[in-house]
Image (tube, rainbow, N blue to C red):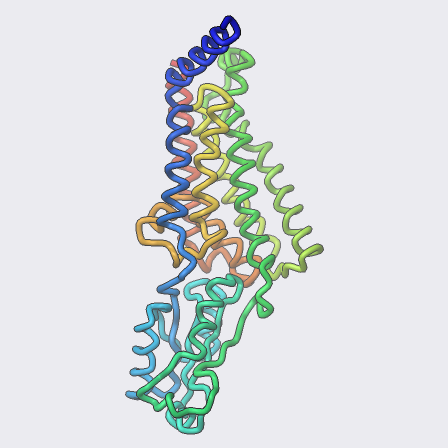
Length: 364
């Protein structure tokens, strides 16, 4: 009985401490709740409404009916039209569309001769997107007498950037976003908290440092660490898994620096909220889970419902995944998707202001 009472007393003490630590108690409830909602609601491998373009070399009633038939599948959503194959390829490289349907001049003759009616140009760097487009190869087209055609694909497919559809080609650049999110936020989220716990913050306060200078001083060393991690991941990915590095080095470094700055800023905001290193780590996990699931790293962005896409757009990882895959795999430039670069710059600037103000308030 004595041992049981002592154990009960310790248990009661732990529950009391947990109830007083509102942040930790909130994480205990919110992490499984959010993870359940993300997996059950937002994650969908049955992808729909893939951004697509159309290149109709001989506009006719038959080609327009064919486009509407494809659109009715809801697999693709035609958003742009092109006049040449070069324009279509440039749009895929820039990431404006994932695929382009090319309809030839002799569409009706090809239908009568049991030949493929058109060709899909596909960004195959994402295997799920490529699989969804490949699934359209044999779709029936009744108004062109597809039912009496000899067994043959309705469309041909040309796979760009990953014709073998190897998983590492898609995973490795996205993994860079996940690892940088985890390490950069964790490093800086514990930075100021560690100074508080060790009693060093009072010494920093007495120095002539301004709050903004302290924030920058905390960020800069981890920028170099982030660049080292980028070099390790992309080098090993290229050497071990034969992931192509098609982008220019300055574009890769530029995109990575923008994301590192945004992630470190988010970590600083967390460090001004958390009271202990444990709370900082819990809040890092709270940010990391949606960054993995909603950024497009594991599941295509197009497969998410609209609400989940709105949430994803607030995450720096979502913008970086698009940027780094485009730069590394498609040799895109930062100017091809300026909205992603501008968002990371704005996120960093606003985040630094918030972290500085919250740190100054905590000093008061």
